[in-house]
Length: 90
Image (cartoon, rainbow, N blue to C red):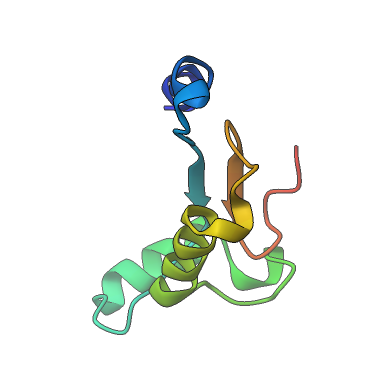
């Protein structure tokens, strides 16, 4: 996906098309089954996330809205990691 996004950014940038990729971390919704929540916690416990909590769906929606909006008009070809700090370039 990263390669495709970057290709789109390069190929269509002159036409005003911006392409970015949102890479979410561990996100839990209220309606998630308890089994799913437990499985996610085993794979990435909250204490390993610098913000010490899982993300919420609305937080990812906010990132998408911000990146798609006019405040990010000069941003293209980027991967935005919305992970609560879990992914820090490693």
